[in-house]
Image 1 (tube, helix red, strand yellow):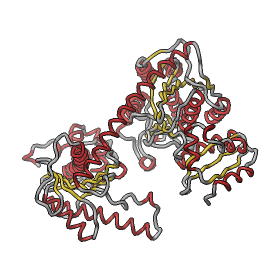
Image 2 (cartoon, rainbow, N blue to C red):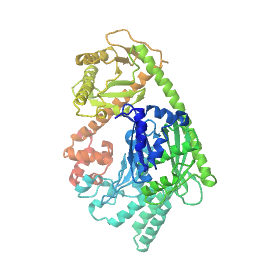
Image 3 (cartoon, rainbow, N blue to C red):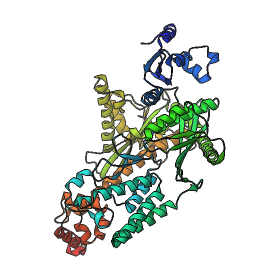
Image 4 (spheres, helix red, strand yellow):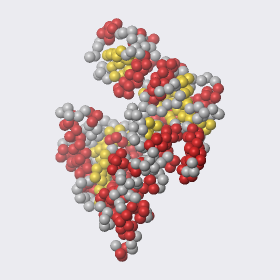
Length: 629
């Protein structure tokens, strides 16, 4: 219910003197701000005063507030947690928001399984497993995962595969798995190895080294020299990684997080340095929207919002966090972090000493990151806005084409025909809306047939989702294809464009559609043989070229995957004794036909579903001369 301003002020008399969270909505019922308070009555009433006494951001916010509600909780700490959850749920316009739409990868050690694995995941769950990250670079995370597999031979097979294994896989025979599927692995020893993995990922490599040296000495004393040699090699690998640390900040072995803020009017950069055992082992930067920095107090609010949002989704946290600014409710925030960690977390803003020197360096990196981001934003906004407006004028559109979709077809010698659909929003790729299609009909390289099918399928998705929305069967966020593009771009000249126009006219759809011929980079409009020729320097043309090139890249990548998959399978199809199950297992174990050919009989026999006879027959067949096959 939307209230009149007078009714809204009267509602203030009903506010309790209790801790809680308040929610402000605009005239359309959208949540525009979520806040927490130790005393709801005092905090919320402070918003309803003369604009001249309010901060500029708060004054603008209160002009749109039309409704108010609140939730009472039992403590200020509960209010802190609830506020964080509601901000994530509603994404309010006037809250400080961690601008992080990516799902960073994490490494998950599956401690809930009898024999844990180390796997990559995209979200953290409260399920009893251990999560490490987030990793900004998936490449860096995969390198860490590979390094760990070399040092700690954990199993890598899926639970389904593990449950049906009757003999160890190739990883066991090359020393990359202890073979728990055999039932001969000591569970306590395996768990001890998992503890070492945890220490490694927490950066406590010296603790691992000490443990491994103790185990190596014990193995040597018991005349288990092979075990001692394996432990010696593991120690050497850990020390090698330990020697690759980036920077040493002191002689003590502290674990900490150094966080510094560099603000601007509408954006702030937060730089984070990860310190493990006194060494800086990594760094990361984030951007926050709506900081409205007006002084040290506001900077502290921004940092507080960052800490809350960041650590609501991160499993591992160090016992000490150093900030370059004091934050609001420092003690309350430290208590919340301590509860999440399961141990004391110290939160401080050092003014002198070694930690302050480190924070100065972190802050300098934050300023540089913010400067780069602002420059990129200004350039992108100017170029993107100019490009969209130019396209509106040149193409005679009723509005600037915010949503641009583009089709591109790809095939290989008339086979593996695919179609790619990419979408740009506001001049930027919206990868969640990308789609690729394997063309169902036989085209034999006919691009017109492929274009006819792909355009018809995309429009069919849109019409179906619109009908489902109308009937209330799905929600708007479940219908990404229900919105029509402001501009539909066809990769090709007049012929491909005519095919798309036929489909749109048959369906009664009025969607602006143009063709972009690659040879001359000329644009064509429906039913007009004269091209639209834009200069090479045109921002509008450059944007359309980026869209077209992205569609081509996306389509070719998918087509190559299909082709490689088909070639691998077809090369093994002709081999006697190799059916679909064995073919799949061989490709999974070796990755390519070349690697299968390079393998010996013993290695082939170790593959799941293979046996000694099948391995010998396969080896003999692969190494015969062409005339014998």
